[in-house]
Image (cartoon, rainbow, N blue to C red):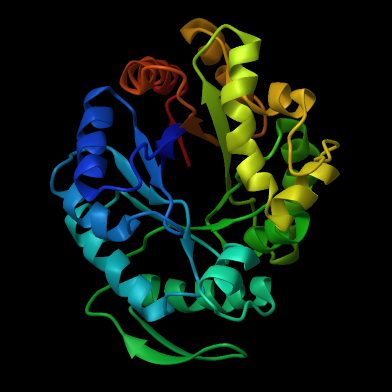
Length: 320
């Protein structure tokens, strides 16, 4: 099945009413895909998507991501089936282990062998959704259950480090990166993804979705001012700090350097942003997940980015 090559991060993660309004607004603006984070101080993506499914017609809805530790895989499969029934062919399920400060530090759930846990989780959810039933016993889960019908929803996994990309290559329909610099994607992620697919005997690697922070400004100083605290927030988590260091941009006291920001963040006027995103799409990247970092007028800047994405959608179309 073909999927969009560009999408946007849900701009309102704290209000279900605001999130639904954003879905309608972005679909009307021609944005083909939306991804919504679940975790931390956010509303639940699948719950909102159940409502969004009946208030939209075309926009593709993806979870990016649902943390696996707090939610049993059967519950995730049940919820996904419900949204799929309301919006068939428009749902993508993104799953990932999240991060130790969140899972252990905030929720008090032991985070043991996260990639092994994710492998079992995806195995169970895929069997339930794609086959309608599962009979599984592993290290972390014992599940024997059925769903009322099948729902062949694509399953994406999150990845930051090469081992996670390798796992995605083995088990996922797609992989979601987050805050990864482009050259890290090409030098570390793509080879690991392809190696995982080859190890699993797959004929092609999974779809690669790359997260791209965007600041709609022509002033480099403004870009740095607005992007630094956002990127730095992620840099406080060990997995991200390790990824940035491997990419050649080690953080000092969790503070991203100007070099990292200028390599990672897409910025400029609409033409400049559109051309830089287009260059990324012309590489090994299958889809871009843009995240707007506001400067002054969030809605006006969102509208400008939406216009860019709609134009890219017309230019590049959809791909499998």
